[in-house]
Image (cartoon, rainbow, N blue to C red; front, side, top):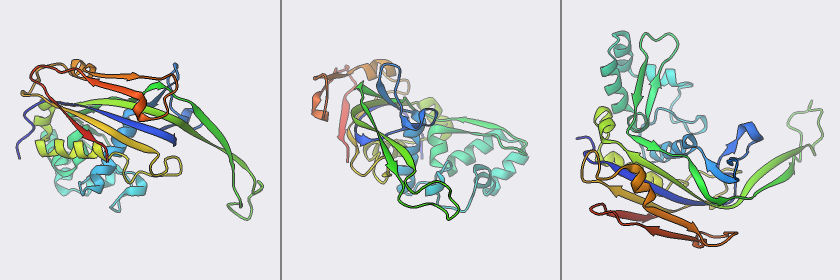
Length: 281
């Protein structure tokens, strides 16, 4: 399978209603905000969701979350050591072979890259992936509600705290977020990332929040509305990613948006670079 031969840029618009899209562990797990009150979702969080969707689609994933793993390995090192060819390349200090095997084995390594630097290994390999993703930022300042919760029963018999011990939950009342990304052909050549792989990434973006529910994110509380997909006609692209991303004009039409329809969306046409627009599922 040949590697991707043309640059791709993309953008995703999604909404959050009464959910915590990405809690900040340094701030009591409150939804992330910048200093101006705009909501944020980290690129690490977004890549986790893409990995989960790829895994749901049957792709082999190296960085699996513990609650979703489909093998018996308890660490990344165990998962890597389970590949005999990879272990052999490590002992032989053949970094190029190691990279080729890792990229052909795991879709997320091929897409996002990975650092293989484990204690006891003789080889340390850093792989740069072709798919880069920006953090998501809301188009307007978001309001965060905090509610106290109680537990109705003690966890253990010896628990000294009463069954009415207080806790806190936080949520974004409503917000529309946007994030952007690109797929670099030069790095795609190195990892073997193909046009079919790009299609898998696109489908993951369209269905980003499927099978992603939790107590902080109930089903239906987060929704992908639009995915914008630009495919250039060359490896380097006709335009810079910054210019392509700026061509998507997003304006909030009211001081207090309550629905996705409160966002005015326009795409500035770039000569020779049409955009494909997909509705979320």
